[in-house]
Image 1: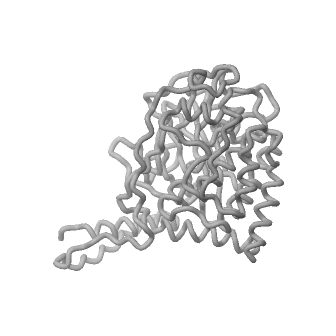
Image 2: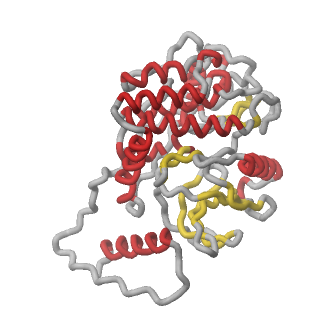
Length: 393
């Protein structure tokens, strides 16, 4: 996972966790790589002081209560939290690997075998979440990390109880990320049910195999009008032939026409076997793509990948059953899509060093001290290497 150094304003410790690096940030706060006293790596999400109010605390507390009820090998586990501190924070299992958007930026689209493995694993995981009476509701590439043991789902902040009118939002509010949002979610329908996650997973798989989402537009309002138009088919151009049928069914406008998560697993396994592979072999192939793509870039100055307007979560009042006309979509401000960012350097990228640069002096041994985790030792070693390669002496 790409990390950056702490800033002078960042805390060095929080809730008993030593903060080592920055992982990422969003509108609500900052996420850090932290370490427990015993050396366990965690991801620590901290709410920014500028947005801390009673409503934010309530939403954050609800997110934590939901996360406590979600479990499974493909869900980043809850570790610890404090909603009453000056800066509320949440610690979860740290997954050492890129999110899917960064993976695509570094490696390009996934081959069919790897995509089928990704689909089978995530569908099985989401079936387990649904079995616990929950929905994710904001599945997208940035919320899926590809770690050493396969993909894991993070950020259940928008999760709600399935088949229930209970919600974390007001009755006429739409929350989610437009790029992967199902039509019923964009229409503000409630309660939402399991097919909303089936659609989102289909959008994720389409993006990972083609580089584009089911619908694209220059403005968010137009994008919503496409999503909520039952007569406008999703764009499946570029999708692998063996996955077109599955993606088409997952992205159906009507909920009843979408497959169940168990059906998605079965169809993905069928694709894997058609390639002459086992499920375990396909999983290893998927994981190897992540390690080869992102391992060299952890401490290089990689340009930040800015999400487009269609990938930015929205929280806005929705009209009832949005019509496909542009005038009926009043769920988000007009935001032009930014230009696509330049992809990160490829796996073989090495910073150019002038021929006259003297060989770096070996870094002195660190003084004796308490033992640190393997992750912390690796981070320290890579920091020393990076410093040595760029030092002027």
